[in-house]
Amino acid sequence: MNHDLAIAGDAHPELAIRVAELAGIPLAPVSITAFADGETRVVIEAELRGARVCIIQPTSAPVNARLVTLALLADAARAEGAASVTAVMPYFGYARQDARGRRGEPRSAQLAARLLACAGISAAVVLELHSPALESAFPIPLVHARADAALLPVIGGWALPKPIVVSPDAGGLKRAQRIAAAVGAPLAAVTKCRPSADVAAVYAVLGDVRGRDCVIVDDMASTGGTIAEAARSLLSAGAARVHAVFVHAVMAPGALERIASSGVERIAASDSVPSPGDARVQIIPIAPVLARSL
Image (tube, rainbow, N blue to C red; front, side, top):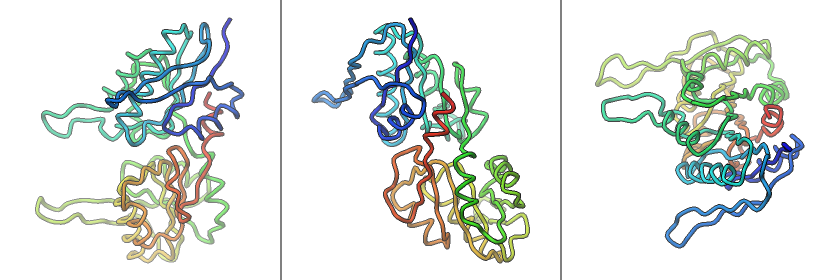
């Protein structure tokens, strides 16, 4: 008889527990440790025969370790007779490596997706992929969840007098369009170009931001460079204030300081990856969005 069980990976167990609670799916006990040589060891301590299993594991830093743990959990679940295994990846690592920039490079995103399918994962739920085109990289059924329902109340709660939604680059324009339409605000964008190989990048603001509260919307902040440069460009173009909302707070060392020093007044991000633990970042719970996707 089919039944549902959830497994919390080691990347973000607090989020996994909240998702399972909201979805009404019991958590199966699991042990995730390491051998003396550093190899990951997993043991699922539950009866899985006939169960529909979902493993909740963002493949955030350290990406390789989280990805391998997810694959091992899937293989263990299949070996114990699970009817199906769904990977719930609030953040999918390697998403930015979806194309070969030069000869000799792999398409890492597609390879990571194939590895998970080979491990026995039969479906996946992901949140705000870096590029929607990545959906075709998965050889298994994929649910691509949007974070809009979590982000919009936060932006509305700021009660900005003259908001304008800004995409910090061309790649995020569709996401920013959705948010702008939902909050009834105009749309602007920041573009980057290099006039020639030896000339520094030039940032241009497309749209009238003078006297407005600019809300930069992006899928992630990793180094923080894109958001910081966009903020400086907006302020130079006459913006009254700049705020930033992004889904994945990947936050490499120095990223938050880089964003804050660029003039961004408010910073908000979901908890798709473990929180940076800094009071300057308003954390947006994403568990309800993921639970609905299940």
